[in-house]
Length: 295
Ligand code: NAP
Image 1 (tube, rainbow, N blue to C red):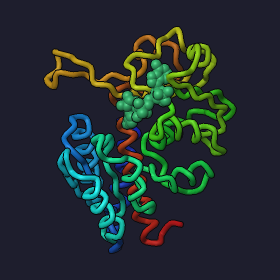
Image 2: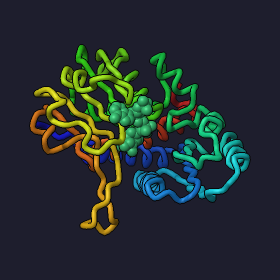
Image 3: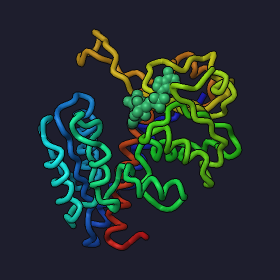
């Protein structure tokens, strides 16, 4: 079994981006600038946002964190996004999800400038991804693809089963794995909460991406010998032994499944770190595109 180590791959991405940013600075070129908006103070969102800002700083990007109160009106958030849409100092804009129930995620995503859509959630980005055109790929699936590439995991002709069909993970993951490129070309089955006898699909899979948010869902009896297992799940479960009072668990029963798999991602230390690396890469790409260096 080979561990797909998010620490190793994301560190390599950051080294490369840090050097590229330093070169840009030396050449008098624009440095990428990411703006992150957080609404309210959801614990998990706070952690993700803090990590995004910290990682920007580590590679030398500019970053701005905008905090809005839980009860901010949809109108105020949309007008902030309208400002950022036209702000030439800003290369990437993202709004941390989920949002409070009174704000429409759909309206918020549509209000982001597609040229700054580093989360890749805007329909323009999604449409381009489906058509195989250059675009911003949502950070988690993009991070997984970068990890497969780093470890040279063969995907062509393989049967991949993606569990979960959300717009941010499962759906784009299934599209990327079935697309015509070096780390695609899979035959893909998408499973979800209405799938009957889900284990009959996973048992046939060469590659399994578990993205459902049910801790320990994928057990050894659901996996064939030698499968590649990607665990996207991040769930906080109570754990009195931790200072925080919770532990992070993935969707895979790691100990048991690792023994049967050829490659597997740990949680934590796997896909989560890759998500940040992919977001940074999208932000650099946005900066270059807006500077006319990329088409
Ligand atoms: P989501 O929007 O809640 O979607 C979950 C998907 O799983 C849905 O498609 C749902 O099916 C399916 N599902 C739920 N229970 C199921 C079951 N018992 N059997 C089969 N399918 C089931 O979640 P998400 O945003 O995609 O996130 C999924 C997990 O990944 C969460 O733990 C989240 O925290 C984590 N995550 C991690 C990262 C990272 O950086 N590592 C990034 C994003 C998300 P229906 O469509 O039928 O409801």
